[in-house]
Length: 304
Ligand SMILES: [Zn+2]
Image (cartoon, rainbow, N blue to C red; front, side, top):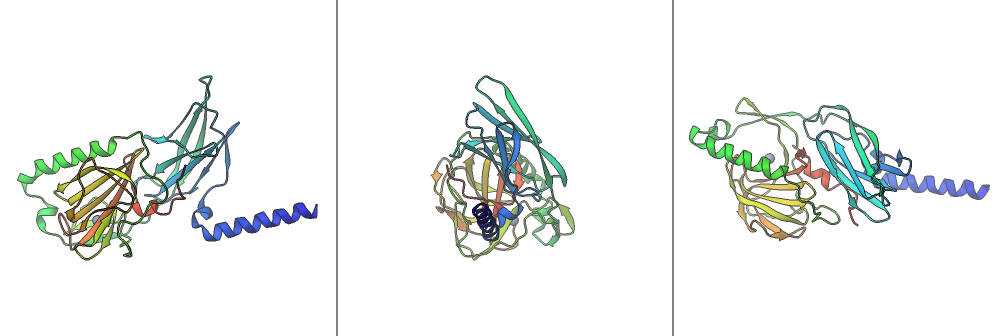
């Protein structure tokens, strides 16, 4: 009995140590029952607007199909070893705070689906308001530029809506710029030249022009060109609905169709497009949800 007591003490101490060294564990959920033979665990039990949540399933290996849904957003599970399945959920930065629901479905070999509903309370990101002065043509673009802007908006929308059924990434995500911190301005409500505009959908990294910009993860280049607002831009498709975007570049050193490794230089910091000075604008999309790219860096290692 004393031994059982002692081993429980050790496991409590170990759990405490893990929770102290890994901040995700503090907010993540323990294993919860989904269906009779499937359990789930979340990397964040109460995410903020703009967060990315890792969903882990245990016990679904004997099922022929595992699926999920977060509102309109489908979840794409991949086998993660040990009979587990993983998927990422993107909480859009404008997702209404309150309790949403994840729907998880595992279909057995006999074709019968088992479903469970997981409450996922979303907290406000408490994003502050930011007032900026930029060149007037970027607040009220000249009429002759409107067709170009409409075309680019439409093209980006279609691009982010496409889901490549492959996972290009392995392991941890890395920051796009070495050794320089981001401004922490994801989600800020923006007032440009006294006119309210859409919230800031990425993180800015102020850095000298010419600083190398690196791929945050392995991915396929799906866009590498100059856009009206974003200037010289590279977009990487990491598969399963996840994209990262690198904007305002001085130069682009990759091309559409190329598959780049994590850490590969894809361009340099510049001041092209709608900017107040040289910086990298780094953004991420997950199934169309505008998520904080910095949050990708905090995800547990996503190995097979
Ligand atoms: Zn930005």
